[in-house]
Length: 92
Image (cartoon, rainbow, N blue to C red; front, side):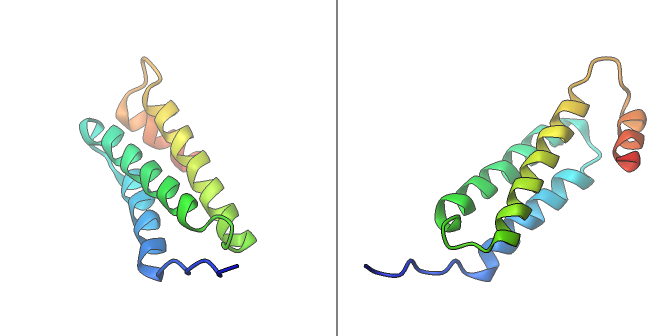
């Protein structure tokens, strides 16, 4: 059986950078797209490397997906203003 090709470090960094961009996004008009881009990149990385990834890397991907899900939930909560939402994130 052939050993799966390892995923280049640049690909790993790409999803991490996209997660960071989503978390730091302050423009509500761009936030949904940034979250979706980060989630898509994580899913692509999972498809490419989940079986060969270390336990630590798998946990990082799971944590990132959970964080993005919570970020989307916070920004979709009716009645919260942008500043209040950012305050919630910093308290987490």
